[in-house]
Image (cartoon, rainbow, N blue to C red; front, top):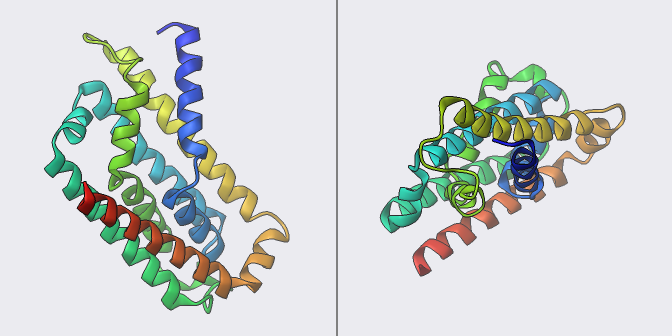
Length: 207
């Protein structure tokens, strides 16, 4: 892969990473409710999920998800169910555990990593995104080196962006203000996740 092609690939990866959506909501919520470590754990696990999809794209398997409506629908509905579960959990929390949340939950970092990975892995839009925009970089007979550069670029840029978000949110003064307004943070996050779940289900049922 030439340097020019790599810069183009990196630009597409960055465009996908900074687009707001459920992934951002999950990283933000874990950063505020837990700690910087929780947010970064969610970010890095999300990057692993992105890397998996990038690898599948190079192997041509993501095209199957796009071409087979049933496979796409099953994954989309599973993703919607997970979004709804996260949304309900946020609404039920109501901000009551934002202060000191990182010290309360044993295994909280593991839960953050789980949510980060699943919110990426159960999002078939990511597969469609890779097939639609990254297909120009994938060619038959790609070697191990090029394949590694492909998925590693996608994973590192994605993880770097969300880790930066988690770090910025947990900076001095920022997280304290957010935690003081924890009820509204949880309500907005919960409504956003539930809304995305409804939109996903509606799109699947109408397709």
